Length: 91
Image (tube, rainbow, N blue to C red; front, side, top):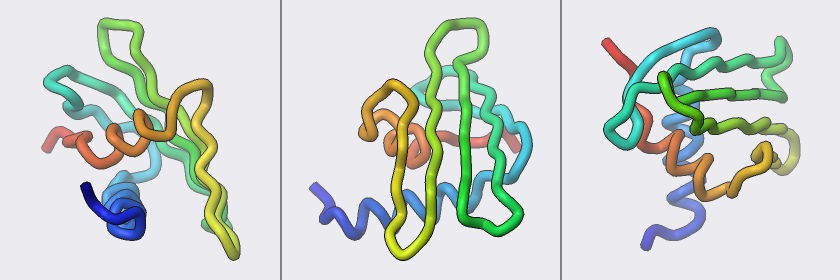
């Protein structure tokens, strides 16, 4: 298993690749749509994703400052991290 710092680094790197706005892609072999919003000061980011044609969702807010805080919306942090790391946007 990766060290926590490596997981955070991977998460931040993958999250930076999400464009603001809406994108469709694949996660866990299924089609998803994801919307990302970033604050103008770059300190807040929110993501809402839903499996297209089904009911599964991923939703969280990320607050940046001296320490970053990941706030999943009624789901585990593990689910959020896995989604960000494994989501493949359509080309």
